[in-house]
Image (cartoon, rainbow, N blue to C red; front, side, top):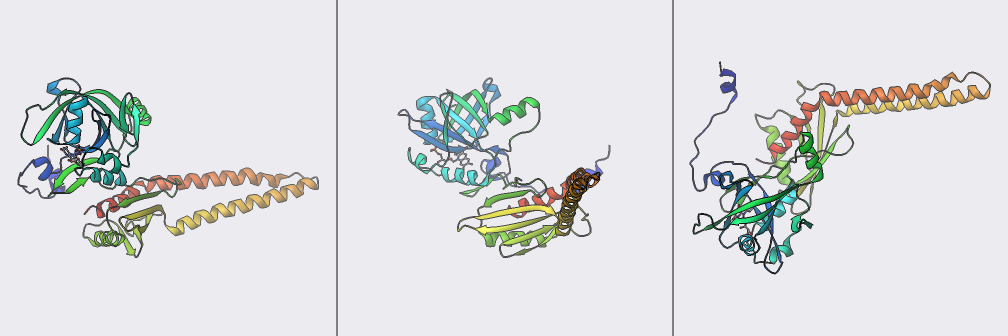
Length: 359
Ligand SMILES: Cc1cc2nc3c(=O)[nH]c(=O)nc-3n(C[C@H](O)[C@H](O)[C@H](O)COP(=O)(O)O)c2cc1C
C-alpha cells in the first residue's frame, strides 16, 4: 500500500524538548476543563477549575484520579466531606475567562464572592448550572502515592448527570456537547484553553454569531489583517475600523458562495465580534426583489379577482394567490439548496476567524 499521498501533504515534524510535566508544558495534550464544587465541614462552598483529572481503570470501575496542589481548598474540602461535583463547562469564551479568574489561589470563602457561576442543587450536591455534564463523586482514597508537592485524590463517580438534551443525544446515538478543552500551560500563567469557537444562530438564511475575545478591537483587526495577508490564507477580504469583510477568493466563488461581515466592538476590556454569513449582496438583493415582485403580482391578482367576482365573472385571477405562494416556496427552497451547496465555504470562513484570533 502506498502512503505517498499521506506523507506528501504533511508539514515538517520537529522535535520538542520534553520538559517539566511534558503534557502540560511541552505539548498540546487535550484535557478537560472541570469546575469542581466542594463544601467545607461548615457547608461553605468552593469552586475551582481543574484539568488533571484522569480515568483510573486499574483502581476499579468508575474511578478518577484528581491531582491537586497540597494546600488547595478543593483537596481540603474533599478530605473533610468526602464529596465533590465535577462540572464540565461548554466551550464558551466568557465562561472560560471566568474559569481562569477562579484558578488563582484565594482563601476559603473568597472564591464564592468572586464566582459568577450559578449554583444548583442536584441529588444532594451543589453543581454549576452552566455545565453540560456533571459527575457526582465520593472520595475513595486520599493521597494515593503521596508526593511532597501534590495530592492525588482517587474519586468514585457515583452519578453521571447530563443536561437533558445531551442525555437525549446519547440515547439516539448522535450529537454531543462542545466541551471546553485545555492544552496545558506555557510559562507561569499562559493557559491554552479551547479556541473561541463560533456558534451560529439567527435566521437560517443569514446566520449570525457573536463571541468575545480577550483582545482589544485594534488587536482583533490587526490579527484579521495579518491572517488575510498570510501566504496560507484561503480567503480574501478587507479590514476597516470596527468591521471586516471576508470572502471566498473570486476564482473559487460560485453564485451561492457566502460572505462574512463582521463588526468589532470594544468594551474596554474585551472585543466583541458580531458576524453575519450570507450570500453576496447582489444575490441577496435579487432574491429579495424576486420575493417582492411575487408578492406584488399576488396582491394585484387578489384585487383583480375581487373585481371579477363583483361583476359576476369567474374570478380566475385569484389563482395568483396559490401561484405566488408556490413561487415563494420555490425561491426559499432554492435559497436553502444554495446554502447547502455553499456550506463548505461557510465552514472555511468560520475557521478563518477561529485561526486568525488564536495566533
Ligand atoms: C483551566 C485550569 C485548570 C487547572 N487545573 C488544575 C489541576 O489540575 N490541578 C491543580 O492543582 N490546579 C489546577 N489549576 C489551578 C487551580 O485552579 C488553582 O490552584 C486554584 O487556586 C485552586 O483553587 P482551590 O484552592 O479553591 O481548590 C487549574 C487552573 C485552571 C484555570
